[in-house]
Length: 489
Image (cartoon, rainbow, N blue to C red; front, side, top):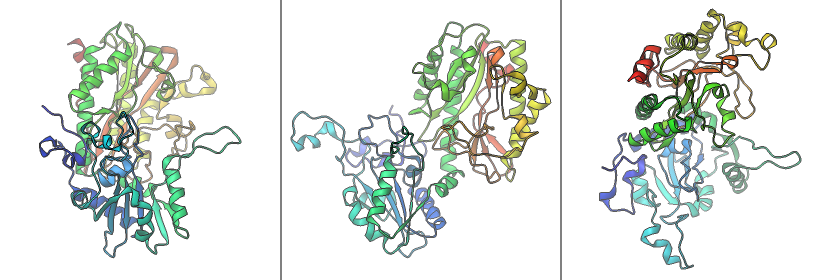
């Protein structure tokens, strides 16, 4: 039986026989993408908006479409560009620039004869070619060749004084004295600016990312499916965990389950680590190539922040902590249940209108109530023994308790209680506005105890509803009794 092919464009196999077209389990109509483009166009004051897709040329099958571009178009083709421009109507007009059917095709051919490019074995799979039929199926006014982008740009932007561009504001490191490397989008923005003298370029990324925080019904269904698949993978892992197994093997068990359930790939690199090796932030572990290769031992805990199946471009992010032997020791159980209590306290606060600071503060208050606050005093404990309490009671209960800018690259900012999730596993850490129905985020209190070699985190995906919340990952066992019962079997 053919597995569903993710993406709006599985029905647009223009180069394949009609019988080869697969059906998606989640049908996202073109009207949904059109509505998103219309909302964005309104937010920028009905001025032109330019959104490039991912480069995806010679990506070896490892790349994926840019999430912002996908959110507005559902297009998988490489080197595509969307332009929304004023045409006198409230919603504006949309044109998608696309490569032709064989442009950038990656197959190898033996002699420099262009006809080989059109052979059967060099045909692209989900590529859509520009033209009237593609425009109709995509729900846009025009679909033009990417080679004509430069000539069409000035004509479509017209006399607008501003062009909104999906800017890449990240800055890559270069040794002192050298100019920093630039990304594809940064180079494209510079080239566009040179073709539009006198037009001011503004950054549309913050507006678009704020839009993406509120999920529509199609997105929620994709996230619900990703969470369900991830929970199924965690159940498979629980049944495979045993002393003598290695962490990498457990990661493989989960991935096999996800793929059997229809997930294309993991949402992020594996974080499966046992024993005292788990007392290390995942961003540091990724520096080691075989960072999941460790043999687990009886009496240890295994930390799995890899409930991370991706479905239809939408990610998941679950974490569970299990006893390798199938049974928590008294000490492990005590700390595990404190973390679970912190999560439950946070969940109890979630409903529309509540600020995320109050949700975080509820979890931090549990850590303080159990007397753990003194263990995060680095002056008393020392850097080699200080505990990691996240969220930190010192900050959220006795400190300023404000949301701060977080940068994993710089290692700055307060690690609070979670993050938004959607087309990216970490969609955003923007909690500047009160919770609203349609927001989906993780709730993930955690505890690191270096002297005991204990790392515990419990993470679920939470949807804010009209009157409270829905736990999208509810099928993943998380109480001590549930975990031990599954592992006994």
